[in-house]
Length: 502
Image (cartoon, rainbow, N blue to C red; front, top):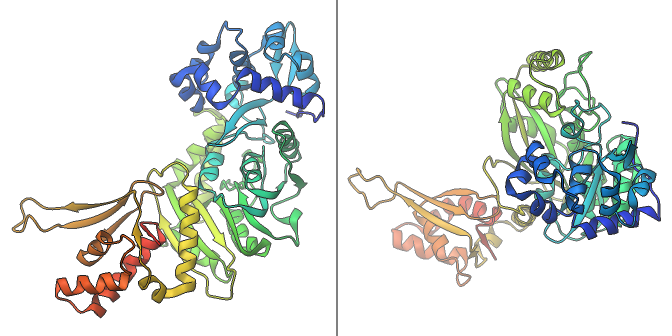
């Protein structure tokens, strides 16, 4: 586990060229494996990928076996797959070692990318490659949490960005595509070595600093802070492993609380911080109570989205398996029991998971807070919806109801309105429910009444909301003032969540 890749100004560009030439990209790997084997590998099952690459000397399949599956490959096959670096160069870089007549990887090297970029990420070998539980100093590669955060992150251009807990530099790669300067911090020296190698391999410039949480950037401010922090709630119990990539050493959900309370000091006016987190829901309270407590006095705008909840047993099972421990093993049972006891000590009945977006207001005003639940599937590239929603909520806070009512809104093209009726009703033509549904973004659903459904139906940019609601009130035989007042909460929600835009 002590091995980390080396930075070599001659050999790293050779490796990059060979990976490109072999088609060792996200698309190339999926084409070589096929959808079934590629899907299984994403679920950390390597047998189908083994069968799809076994006995093949095609460069991309050799590289898959070497760096993704952890199998030794013939030295000559490695030479052909890495024609400019060669197998000897891979050994010199510290990404592989000789094993008789074969070459075996010493780190995981995976293609990764988004719609506009193709990258590679270096990290420690996964549990499926080694067949052993993870070491406590393990440096994680591309995982579900990192891809979730990348999807939810806003991608506006910024001057300065911070990847707090940089790990293998997944978030930093994304940040480098829309930030003028990227800084990464991590308490793990091994993680910083991998991050530096990932940056060099992708020819990306970033500043890397060693230290805990925000300590390495004391006194600095950023336009955007992104973090996949070590948020796992792990019991402080002797004999229970603690993993650097997921355990911060705080009691309970203290690391998330610490970030919420301190990150505002490191944001420029108008600056945004986004991170993932877990939070404890204690008996007799709600998850919103927890967040109201944390946000009090920070002065930050906050959009907290709870995506999922688990009971203590589900949570213990998830994170015991995450480290490669197997059910029935003594250490698994010990960890499981420790988690249950730890949660019971604090009277925790559930654990929430979600995406945190906070913003330092650019002006002197009261911060806005939106605590929402979005449990279902969201559209790809949801970060665009987060950015739009952040701007809309800020406009609502700063410009007020007069702006809201005097703007001519247009309904978004992905929005549909559903009418639900009860066939056995005495008035089957009258809807029992009217729902506005988004096809993209967060795929939110809003309940409408007759007035707001009518408003949504005429949002084509030709009438202000005030004029439209006044006309609808006359049709309904209601007072315009009463109709407008009743419609305001729904109109705010329609604007905040992107059902309509100016």
